[in-house]
Length: 180
Ligand SMILES: [Zn+2]
Image (cartoon, rainbow, N blue to C red; front, side):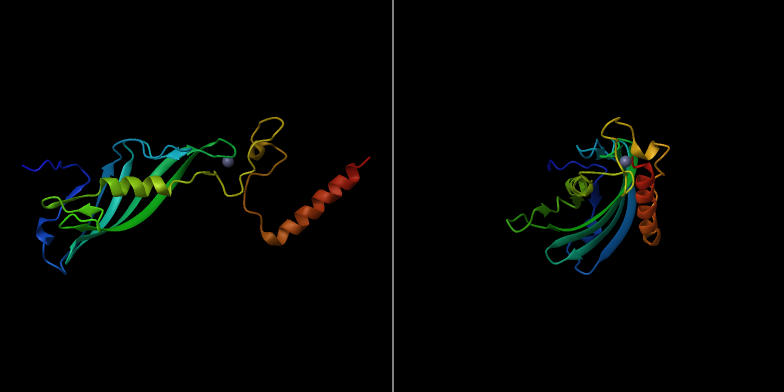
């Protein structure tokens, strides 16, 4: 008997075996089996992983193309605010009929197991230094407060580049009038 174990990540491909040219697509949600990622943001256990997959029968095996979407949560690397970030990642991999040095994955009986590929793709897509906004000013080095929360600092919105020169001018005027 085969020791192959079916999980929510295994997909039956019986109808595609040895039928080059045949193709099938489907999408499904799988709760993340455990926490994915060890960094500042990760996909929590139980968070749905939405998988869009295309299975193509080719001469050597089953070609799997998948898009994964999920939500990662954690904290901003600059201001430590809680953040939620979308994860969108894709991969394409051949599951070969016969195991060989040329192929990392193979068809088990009439199934393919997408779990290691989905795990790796999601984990590798997570940023090392996630930020709440691209221009997050981080923490005040003196007070440790979030600069974005400081009343004198506007919320971190994108500044129109046409105005940034004026903003710089205003700042230097302030310095001049305050100079002793
Ligand atoms: Zn931040």
